Amino acid sequence: MAEPRISSIDGKLAEEFAVPAHVEEVKAKMSAFATKHAAAGRRVVLITSGGTKVPLESRTVRFLDNFSSGRRGSCSAEYFIDSGYAVVFLHRHRSLYPYTRMFSTINVMDALQLTSGSSGEVLVNPQVLPNIAKVLKKYQEVKDGGLLLPIEFSTLSEYLHLLKAAAQALSTIGPKAMFYLAAAVSDFYIPASEMPEHKIQSSNGPLQLSLNMVPKILSPLVKDWAPQAFVISFKLETDAAILLDKARRALNNYRHQAVVANVLDSRRGYVVVVTPKTQDELILTEEDVKNEVEIEEMIVSNLTSAHNRFINQQVS
Ligand code: PAZ
Image (cartoon, rainbow, N blue to C red):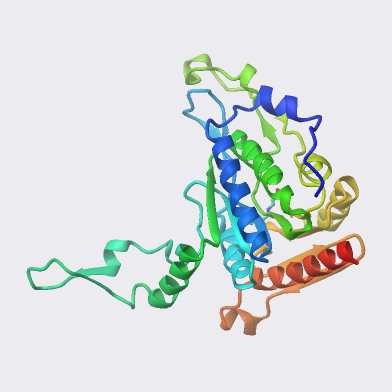
């Protein structure tokens, strides 16, 4: 297997983005997870999910955030597990999580009832938590099988350092690793050296912000950190007219395997999987919606087939 290499953005990452204290510990966990599953004949997918938080002060009171709920990532994690993958789930703290996502809008107190006796037993109301037994069974199987490794981030800095650690950890399994980068990552940040320490005072008048561009992490991931892996990025736009052009440009610039292109308002029912040679439109029909089919099932099916072909090409 090709060893991860030093990248030209390593210095910038270390200087301008606070390194999380637990990064080496998490890297060791991811590495052990990848090695164990690859030895058992499983592929491993690293899914990023949810939005990054960009602090405006180092003792953070205020921050920039974005719309991402983590539904794409959490839902996809379940379909990857159903397809035989082990999943490293790098997700925003408190964003949607595999299996529990189905009950995220429910107040747990409304779903439980105390029995009348003195034993203090609690009953679940299946009307409030539909399918709970089925989902709980699946969740416990996944947990017992050690198929899901959850890792949390909140800030952009945590995300960048943990993604780099994940890429290096999973690089040891070569083409059996997939990166499914569905998180909504800020393009802008304030470098640590320019960030005020204390809460910005409104008594100083209107706030003018000057933000730097976040380094393009996809470039070192593909070139240096995990050069043999199968890498999928996501591209979100609000203007459908520029979406496919942006997706193609990303493929050209970073030379990875595919871009999943989507538009904010239609992202639950329509995406295009763009590769250097193909363009697959995935569309949920009204029938699919009635039958509660989720578009992530189609995305995962499309990409796992492409991953198969990618692995077969490496060995032939
Ligand atoms: O998290 P979610 O389900 O609400 O949204 C998913 C998404 C739109 C964030 C994802 O499909 C995506 O396009 N991520 C990349 C965004 C970007 O940086 O362009």
